[in-house]
Length: 196
Image: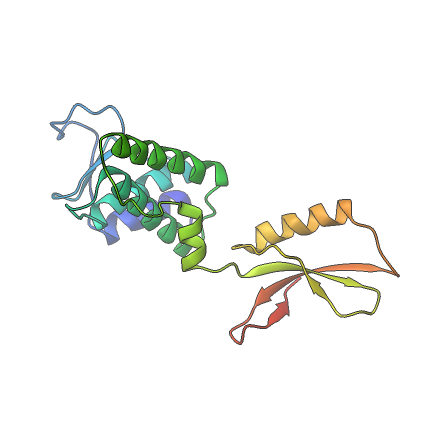
């Protein structure tokens, strides 16, 4: 699916009313959601990851509407919802984009703490996603004919594991014979299966 196809699917699936700002009484300059009427305002459709993730985040506000949440918690849960949907659509959200949302969540949490708020709990996006989806890929090193040794790092996507493998190929040298690197995927029985 293209980004625009994903966007159209999200708007249809979650019954979202899109507004260019003309139906909006709020004077906000940025994209925002009106949760009660399921409307996303001032969002611009573009065939890009950033535009798609912005839409998913705003729909996340609508889908996670809870009056007891404070601003940092609202942002955290909307972003987690967006990351989950992006994963379902096979979208890779760059680390920089996740960090941008994390900085905003941290800023809102810090503002809440300065105003006397307490008990925020863990609002770390990466930790929350890792708990929900344990990393599935790793790099295995095989020296000569010896049994493979798993690299200590785990990765949520094959692409990230492949990057680690490339980095290892550039920095490692063979000990006692030939060095072989392989991408392995965690199996249902908690074993590892070579996929590349």
